[in-house]
Length: 121
Image 1 (cartoon, helix red, strand yellow):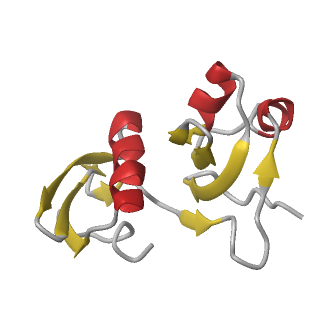
Image 2 (image 1 turned 30 degrees about the vertical axis):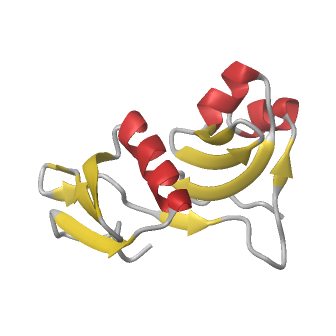
């Protein structure tokens, strides 16, 4: 979280395959400018708009003690007024909630980006 909510233009973190998949979703949705894998490090190019970071809020939704699983119809109902992005773990891999609705699959909600104060319970 602290890597993505900053005024810096570039951040570095250690490599993990799950991180690379999440960054690919963020790149596709336009929340980061890009990323580069160099050995066991990932360099993330953060995006800013009018001097402020594009990623305003990052929340971890599913935790080890409480996983949040949504079926496709629940996902469509919960995101009908959502302007942010949910990163989902599905049988098809890591994807955005919009892709899940398109494919008609559900999954575990991992992160919520820029979607205000939407609560789960």
